[in-house]
Image 1 (cartoon, rainbow, N blue to C red):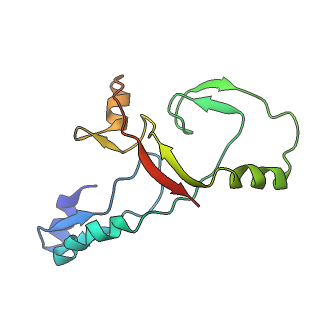
Image 2 (cartoon, helix red, strand yellow):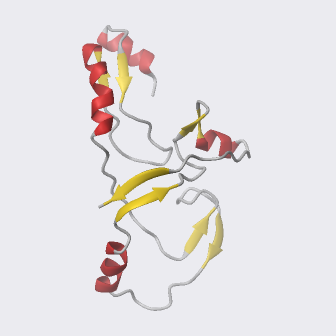
Length: 132
């Protein structure tokens, strides 16, 4: 995000944001202006909601659709919607998550995907998340 452009357009120096999007993510990045920047920390305490899409049959170097395919497993039979829903419901609740190297989570002031693109792997912090 180029905040200097927003500062110029809005005529203010005080601009903040409510998070960082991974490079391939499409979504809304909340921007706070002026006195509202104080509210960003409270917005972040409220949690986030993600919606996703799953493609079966291959794995990539980045654990998303933008990476190079490293393994393929054909899906040989049609999927039963009820079985898929049942499997997904078993993945809900609190979990301990280690973010992938290709994510915007920051470690030592740098985004993980910056380390990954430089061929470096760093220890990633575990965190508790709840999947609804």
